[in-house]
Length: 149
Image (cartoon, rainbow, N blue to C red; front, side, top):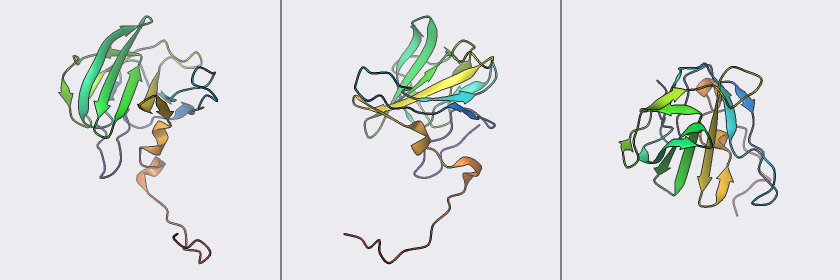
């Protein structure tokens, strides 16, 4: 089960979880785009909370199972399509099972998880919240021309 490293959110699916479709922010609030990422998985895979918080929605939305969790700092994560195993108002810890992955979101694979994050009305790229693939951070050499302001 994925855990939450200090300062990072956890991946909502156990590895491997290839990114099948990246975040594509809309140019306008109601414009076209992809307001999350699609992660490859298998039907029945456990979907876990990316961080601790409170479940604010768990049920059917437009024919799909959806779970949304509010986190400290004003972030909300959303997971679909899943068969929820949590209830609204329930506190969840990072890595706690929210439900199981169901088919129906991606057309090119049997099952994938659409994972979204927003702060207020702004959608964010969930991949900026998780550790890089492989779990290692690579620091670049300091350049003198990049002094703090």
